[in-house]
Image (cartoon, rainbow, N blue to C red; front, side, top):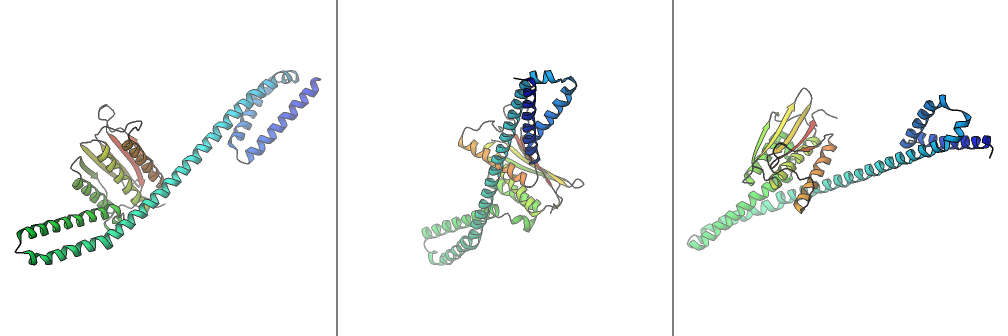
Length: 315
C-alpha cells in the first residue's frame, strides 16, 4: 500500500478519535478530558522529532498504547462513579431509615406520655384507695404495697424511656443540659463503666436545631456503644467550645478493648452498622467523624476515641 494512503488513513482515524473525545469532553466526560490533555501533551513533546516517515512506522504502536491507557482511565472513572452512586444510595437509605426511626420514637414517646403514664398514675391512686379496705389483712396489705412499688417502678422506667426517645428535651433545657441529663441517665442505669463529662459549654450554645439534635444522637450512640462493647472502666465525654473559631470539638473516649478491624460476631456487626450511621449523621451536619484508638501504645486495651466537630455558625 502507498505510504501516502496509509498516512492519510491514520490522520483521518486520529481526527475521528479526537473529534469523538472532544464531544465527550464537552459533555463533561472526565476520562475524555484527561485523554485530550494527555494527547496534546504527547504531541507537544514528540512534534520536534516527528517526520512523515517515522509517523507511519511508529504511530500504530503509539495509538495502541494511548488507547490502552484511555481504557484503563475510563474503567477507573466508571468504577469511581458507580462506587459514588452506591455510596449515595446507602446514604439515602440510612437517612430514610433514621427518619423513620425518629418518627417511630416520637410516636412511642407520645403514647407513653399521653396514654400509658396517666393509666399508671390512675392505677396507683386506685390502689391507695384500697389500702383502708385491706388494713386488717397483713398478707393483702403486703401484696398491695408490692404492687404499688411495681407500678411506681414502671412509671419511672417509662419516664426514662420518654426522656431518651424525645429529643425535644434539647429545646426545653438546652443542648448542654440535655447532654448532662444523658450522662446522668446512663450513670444511673448502668453500674459501670464510670462516665465523666468535661466541657466548657454555655447553657445554650449557638447551635442550629438540626445540628444540636444530630450531635446529641451521635454522642448518645457513641456512649452506648462504649458501654455495651468496650469493656471499659471509664468513658470520658469531652466538649470543647472554641467561641472565636465558631465550632465545638466533641469526643467520646474509653479505655476499653478497642474496635476490631473485622467484625465476626453479630454484636460486632451491629456495632459496625452503628459506626456507619454515626458517620452519615456527622456528614449531614458537615462534620467528619473520626474513629481511632485512644491509646495506641497499649496493645491490649487501646481504647476507642470517637470525635467530630460541629459548627456554631448559622448556614
